[in-house]
Image (cartoon, rainbow, N blue to C red; front, side, top):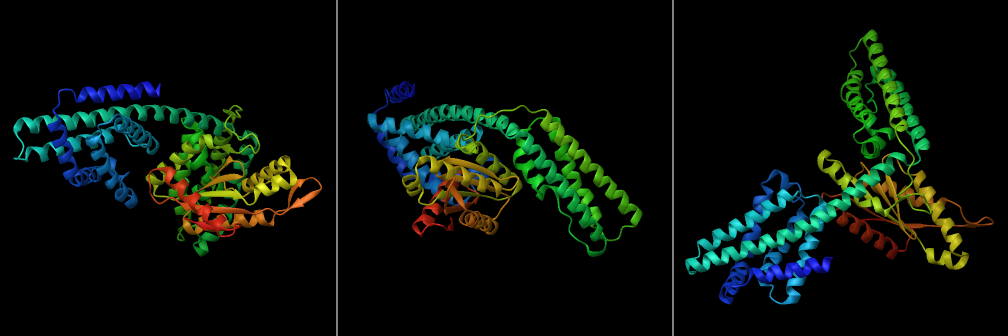
Length: 458
């Protein structure tokens, strides 16, 4: 099917140039090459002044890299002549459309960018008095038609990838609702009760010491709800109730309790209100899980962790949360050291046993909102939510140390010491999650090259 589409693009490209004199084609290519930098400057100046578009372009590395890429795109679009050139041009437009979908750039933003390029080119050519009026008119029409055809191909690829992402996102939502339902329910109930106990204890001290009361959103339950539960139960009434109660407790009730000038009667009333909110949260949480059904798709067969199928959905969601809330997260790439040696010495069944034990150990060190994936073979990926560089390094080092200290059993009667190499990259604002994954992989490579059993930061 893709080959048929490519052939159609080539036919339309050729039809676009029918009747166009070589002189016009040559002059248009020359003008684009002369003004490529000016066109790219105008494009990014316009887009950076657009509130919707600017959020995808404010990252310095993106701006620096994309300016050159835009110039090259304009030149390629204006100089493609041979069949190989045209086929490569088509493939490149498909790639760009897929990236736009992955980064979640709205189609309206892409079309606005195309419009501003066409407008600026027309403005440049209209001021060129060395060209005849007819030549200027045909050159502008040719440039605009080429851009429009490129937009068509990008849009086709964009639509295909958006549909795939939507299916994956919904599959993940259904999966995350039901992953180890009974265990997760009790785990989150315990986390919520633990927060309640802690806040009540701290509140007893706050009147005299001004102690900062722990917020729900920063608790184990809060991390789970914001990064997993709210997505899993999206659209469910109880989910909205929980979100509203959390906001009220964190932003209204707890700040009031932290004040030192309250009388005892008022303080008791506020503690009772806080207790009522906590009971309401427990009730809503129970109802959430009661509405769920068991579903097991999307798990890695060996470890029962998430597999890479849902990685794009989770990464895109975390980037969106960071973009809207100004928070950070980190990606931790984990690789079992000398795993081939384990397989060769003890056999593949023993290797599987080690992978399972490492997975369990890593899972036990996950916080409520963190995500753990098995990427395949001996490689895992952990997404640490709400962390900066310092905390990400600390948590990564804790993972490494925990694996090193653990006694592994490749076979029931034998023990083995296992280590892992870890590469960690903190989200820096780049809108494409694949960039962050590559940074983590580079850091992992540095850790392995540096002698293994260590953590390297990107």
